Length: 156
Length: 156
Length: 156
Image 1 (cartoon, one colour):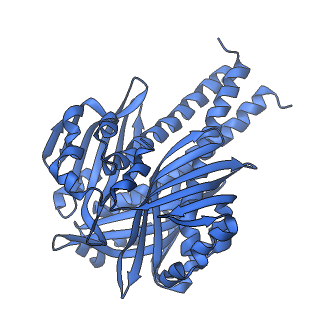
Image 2 (image 1 turned 180 degrees about the horizontal axis):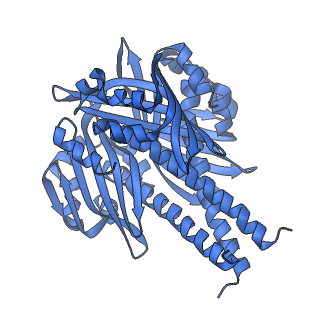
């Protein structure tokens, strides 16, 4: 039978896992806010310095480059009409690494009507560095292609 | 080194924060259900007695007045065809206060087709009173206006 | 005043509840992934052996039968164009039982445009067996009918 010190230490580790998952969820939920807010600095802080982003084969390498997601022509054209509604995500934790797999649905208002501008399956790979969860890799695969299902199956 | 009593007390406070966030999430998730259920009483209980609701400059003051969100003509006209899909929300806790910022997407079925009736950025300010989290203030800003981005930036 | 052993035991039960809710959320979030991934085996594992599924009066009985949700003609016709965006859900825990009530929004891409193919209120009844949360009953009621509101009111 473990003594009370050991019991408390084990419980502490379980609480840390719950806190980690909450922190990851907040990073993912904040992503949409930052791009819809036209705030590349806030968005950049969600990514690791050495992040790699692959959106249907369009690549962004590193945090500075990632900010182009917000500052680029494509995104600027849908501001302020867009809503990047992310999730839900199935999250798997493994120490200081985590994977979150789910959906990205981007709504855009055009001529007074809101429609769906883009929808994709999305996989986020996160790492905890300096006590903060950051996105290291992001893969986004638009719906409508059989090969996109592999991204989902990797989480099952 | 803290003694075991102190360690357990600190861990208890961390668990309380996780429970608080879960409770807040439940309030926000229940909001949609209550309005789609045509249930102004259940919806009213989510708001504080002295709540202030500002939906694109249309105001509701206090819990009784808030019930008009459900009983009003506009909402009654979309029942039972609506789905108030709320979130996701980035939540920040500060003791007995909390802020949740995210999305409100309202779908309505019309002539057999489901479309998006309204989409907005939304900010909930909650307070814990008598052991229960309640909405004290709610701001909703429709997408499509540059000034709506301020609501999002306040959370970044 | 409780002694430290009792305090730690009570705290452990609270952490277990948070872990239970996280596990339930993961089951529900994984459901969408498994059907969009065309993966009936992964989907089947989310359901209990003796599950009952009632989708607007169309019934599936037991795990094997449930797999037809994926393998059936209707679902195969919308692959790989679909995104089963589930939630949010208001979750109520009661020991080894739980109820999650919320939304199912199914998007389908057709001729390059993503629209809403089906939207419903949904109630999941889950049970924890062998340390794993599984779906025992699922009720899905399409929006657009007054009687569908009863599903939501049962959660309020």
